Picture 1 (cartoon, rainbow, N blue to C red):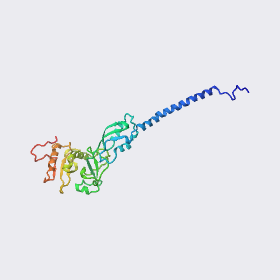
Picture 2: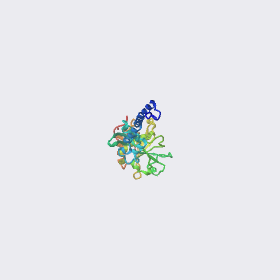
Picture 3: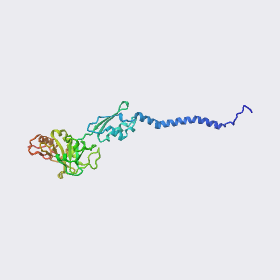
Picture 4: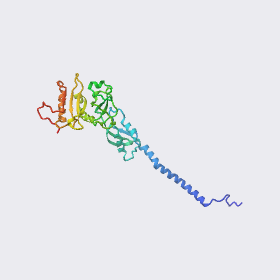
Length: 309
C-alpha cells in the first residue's frame, strides 16, 4: 500500500467550500439574530426596567384629608402608567392626562422629570362645597329637623362646578355644618357619573349660590339651599332658590334668594345688593319676621336699588 495516498476517498471541492462557508455564516447569522432580538425586545425591556414610571417614582401634591383614597395609587393602577417610559418625549403629557381623568383632580398644572428618575406632579384637587340631598322614596325635601330623623335621605358631594365627587355620606356620618345642603323635589343623580357635572340644572343653580355663600356660611349660620319649581314668568331654565338657616331657639329663618347668581331677571336686585340685605337681616337677631324675599327691591330703602337690566 502506498503510504502517500489517503486512506479514504477524497472530499470533493464543493463540500469543502460549503463547510467553510457554514463555519463563517453560522456565527454571523447568530450575531445578527441576537442584535435584532436585542434591538426589538432587549432594549425595550432594559428601558422599561431603567426608565419606566413606577409608583414610588411619582411625587404628587399632598392631598387634602377629606379625600379618603390615594389619588396617586388610583391613577397608577387604573391608567397603566408603568407602560410609559421616561425616554418618551410625550411621557409628561401622558402622565398629566392620566391624572386629569381622576374625579378628585381639577387640574394637573405641571409634570416635571427630576433626578433619580423621580417625577413631580403638581395637582389642584377638587373640594366638596355642598351635599346634594337625595331620597329614593321621592319624598318632598325635608326641613332641617326632619332631615336628621329620616333614614332614607343620603347625600352626594359636589364641588363648586357642580361636579359629582366620589363616595357619599349619609347625614348621620358627618356634621351638617361642614357643608351646605341642597334640596329639590324629586331630585335624582340619574345619568350623572362621578367626575361629571351634575346633569340636573337645579343642582347647577344651587351650587352657584353655594359658592357665593360659602365664605359667610358659618358667620350667618346658613344650613341649606332649596330649589323650587321653574318660575313661569322668568323664562325657560330658571329656578327660584331659597336659603334656610340653622334653627336657633326653635326658629329657622327662610330667605327667598331668587334666581341663581348671574341669572337675575329685570328688576331683580343684583348679587351685591342681595348680600347686603341678607347680612343686615341675619345680623338682626330680633327681627319679627324670620322670612325675607331678596328677589324684590327693598320697599323701605327710600332709594333706587341696583337691579339687573
